[in-house]
Image (cartoon, rainbow, N blue to C red):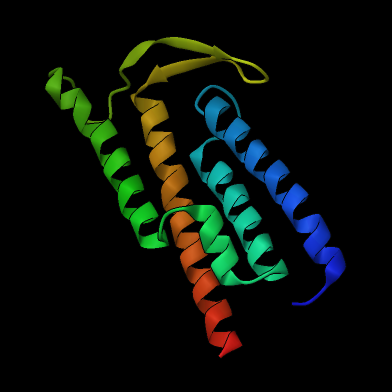
Length: 141
């Protein structure tokens, strides 16, 4: 799309969306939010950039191929469930290792639920962008 208004507004809006997605990701296992909704918002930011410019520019923002993003997220989510087995606990048992204070988010509890949320975040970004980018590339041809 060759809209100058969309191109001028896409970058600042996409950066705000990515910030909001990280905020929702980091507070998700304690309050409403989490990896799924954070991933959807981040994917919508990348899709906005793809609509304003092209798919290649949006892929440049991603730094990873969507397939790599999906597989890395699945590996993180799986490892968060399997870590409990190392401590002889049932699979998917939450293991906590302290907390971290971040501005705007406040206290983030560090543990396997956060690792699982990050994995879901990357899976959702990868799947959403893979589907939409594929559709946009087919339409362009």
